Amino acid sequence: MTETVGVVAEDWLLGAELAPAVDGDPLAPLYSGAADGLLVLPFCPACGLALELEQRVCDGCATTGADWRPVDPRGTVHSVTMVHRLERGLVRARAPYPVADVEMAGGHRLVLTSLEPLPHPPAIGDAVSIGFRRLGDVAVPAFTARTTPHGEREDP
Ligand SMILES: [Zn+2]
Image (cartoon, rainbow, N blue to C red):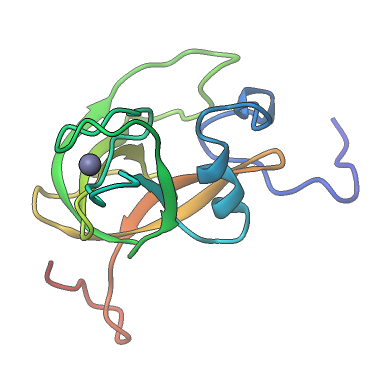
């Protein structure tokens, strides 16, 4: 297989053909923000409560709709699962990989995998930050350990 000029580096987990369709997707604002390196998440347009990604009726005030805004990309690991699944042609990873439920500083919860392959899962309560993996032309959020400027792990 030859590399084509202009093709971005391949993701460690999934092939570019598995990139989500962005146009018309309910999560289009998330992908649009991610393309600019911003984590953009939905809030209730009336009371400002953090909404789940596909939630369109607020649990707090029953208002319909979502107001997408950039948020603080810091969070802490609430739970983590190591996925042991070898699926040729779908999953590229050759080793188990983590999927974490991350509590974001602004109240959202995100379930996502890591920015890079991780041989060991993060610990519950670990401080993480959200970065972006690239699937073809689409950027998707992923967690990475939050470190201090000296490279040490940061406390949540
Ligand atoms: Zn509301």
